[in-house]
Amino acid sequence: MPVTQILGKGQPARLNVLVVAEGFRLQEIGRFKARCGSVVAAIKAAPWYQRAPYLALWRADTEVQGNEPALGWPIPPCSPTAPPLPPVRFGASYGKDGVDRCLGGKDGDVLRLKLQLQSELRQSTPTFPGFDRVLVLVNSLIYGGSGLGTVAWSSITPGLYIPMALHELGHTFGLKDEYELECKVPRTASNSLKDFNISSDPVRPPWAKWIPPSAPKVTKGGRCETCDVPSPYPAAVVGAFEGAYYEHCGYFRPSHRCRMRDLKDPFCVICDMIIANVLDPKLPDAI
Image (cartoon, rainbow, N blue to C red):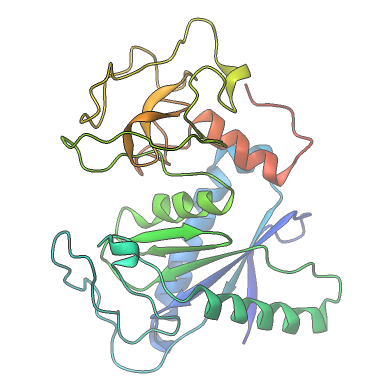
């Protein structure tokens, strides 16, 4: 199976990402290639890539056999499970972990393909270090995605798949979700956590040294059923903003707005810096 480099050709790469097609028939591979091109363009424009352009993307045209995929597969609201998307190669389906919009599949099958393709690539390029991450683009217009470990999944929902793909790739860089669940239902953190972009300690979070004295923590005042509270600070200001990691209270995030919280926003300066520093550990801090 041919593997084509689509980003970072001729440049040193500290991280290689394999982009895999899921649910695309042979005659639909052109659609997959176009979506890959859009993702590449978005990465090139990202601040973290411009600061650390050491990411390479490779495309694997993994077509499937069978009938036309069910684009826009109907999923009942709040359905705990949803039928698979036929035909698929890696078991893509909605309803992962009981969340209807959570789109995922058989990570093990994806990782086995990754090993196979990097082995084939090393036959012509023995020094190729291997693929570090995998992004699976699923041929469905229904909103959905997930990211865990080194594998990220994203549908090709019009207007959303680019930020969604980058959000899910963010998980493979260690970033956690910053959004909340069940608005108007009291939710509060039950465990302590201090990791990358989430902390249960608003005074000494991992990003504490970048919090200016003029930007103290923004809490909800115990209103643990509220999804959001207005911030008195501009979006780029770093602080400790309550409401993250699916809970209304108890967990804090670095900025009021971020792609790890809402797809329509760019990565905040802390998440941007985390991604850039994975690609270049010697990079000076952005703030």
